[in-house]
Length: 306
Image (cartoon, rainbow, N blue to C red; front, side, top):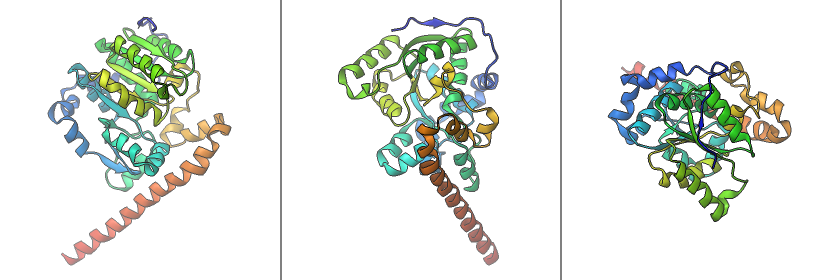
């Protein structure tokens, strides 16, 4: 297992502002959600979009909730559904249940945010694993909470560790692990992942294996570290390492990150985005629009009767 890595002085500014997230963590108002209600009440406020339940939270509020819970020794699971994940969940009830069971579920996809607005229960913003890996590690560094990275090809998690430590002075990375593909089906390999993780005793674990592999693994690993927070982060470790380029911020804000990735990896992603995800996104948005129109007409009829 890699030795804990301590940060070097930061050479560059953050890709996304961490200060706002840290202020939210310190704010008693931002932290009140976890203290006052617990998991069940928090889930009651979720919005169903694209067939899955999503928390109407900003990135800063996610960081605040995770840090407040971690400091109390209460662990959890953060899942970040996008259109592709919603499509998979629509075909497989077990995947939908996996998402719904997570302590926090936030929308990693502008079509989901747009649909929520049409439904009249708006999600405040898109919250991605690629952003959370920076903001959560920044908050963890400020609170001296150790983190752990699982996923990516050989060397990628170690490169991500170095980049995160350079960005966040004081960050402690308790370990990194890049297990071979398919390890979760090998009891011995899975046991090794579990043993290394439990021995490192991190407070925050990023698992970047893609949905649903990463989130099924998280469900398996949580029993050994009930006080840790696990984040299913997809390609976030590769993005942090710089081994995969991420779309410019304006493309993500306008729902075009998929186009950037399609241009970057057309052979791998063409079918997923063009054949599978785009039609499903259209169905989500058109369905939300239809429900809004029907709801508006019903409200008008009620007002006329009154």
